[in-house]
Image 1 (cartoon, rainbow, N blue to C red):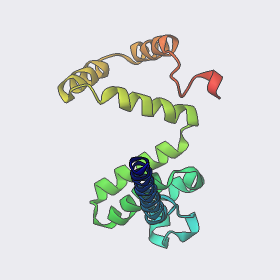
Image 2: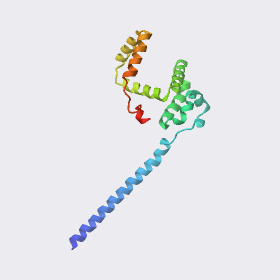
Image 3: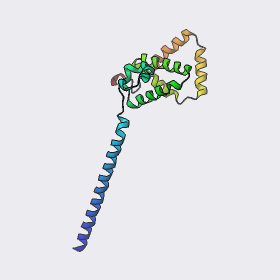
Image 4: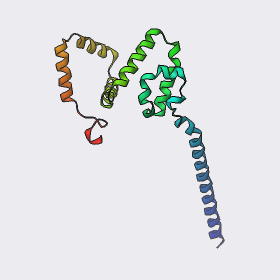
Length: 163
């Protein structure tokens, strides 16, 4: 009978140890969530940006509220670096932001897909492909674009069933 009691006590001790570990783990996870929440949820409204930041990011104003917090943070960092950029860099940035803002959702997704696809291509191959493309006539470029549009397969994101 005494062996049974000692086994029962051991089991209870283990249960308490397990329970305390579980509670400690939950408390740590809770604390991490509380600490990370301001970083995750620090989406800024357009009005919270400084006047200088709004001036730099003006092409993105219409889409600002739909950007994820990490993207907003990235663009705020770009706006903060903007004064230290050369005039040429500033001009390129403004031009690209304006072009991006004018794209439809479908065009933006296609641009993202193309970017991801080109990550695996070496710079030399990209340069060679661009050079050969530049040698094509306008008619050949148009035919190539039409051919590409006909053969492109819907991606997971652009599939009509998901829209």
